[in-house]
Image (cartoon, rainbow, N blue to C red; front, side, top):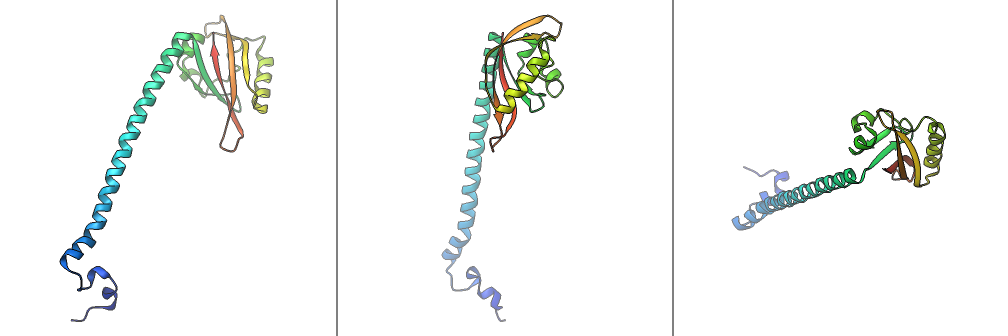
Length: 171
């Protein structure tokens, strides 16, 4: 029986290799595969450790935030909350779930200050400016006034465009 030409061009299928050479040729891809699996498992373990550390950091931050009466929020270009940390409930009475995607940064402002602060907030955001130690009157969910100090800065995308604003609010 004749060996087809296509088979003759595949080195492993040519009969002039010793059994040891053939074993080596067949083992190399297997070793590479094992190496890749081991490397991926190591990366997965490292990623798990990083996630655990991040979670511990987040818990510590939330504890410090709660103790200090400070919270962080982020808004998009329209002023709608995209992130609010849990301490907001102790300061303003709202849960993050009541604010994120439902309320704007100016909804909690004192009524007499609302329009002025809304315009100021959007101007600062458009310019990409920072807010430093600005006193702001806000309304608690139950209606009483909460005096806060705001520090904030614009949030940019990878191209440098302003996509929102973030602020640290403390009482």
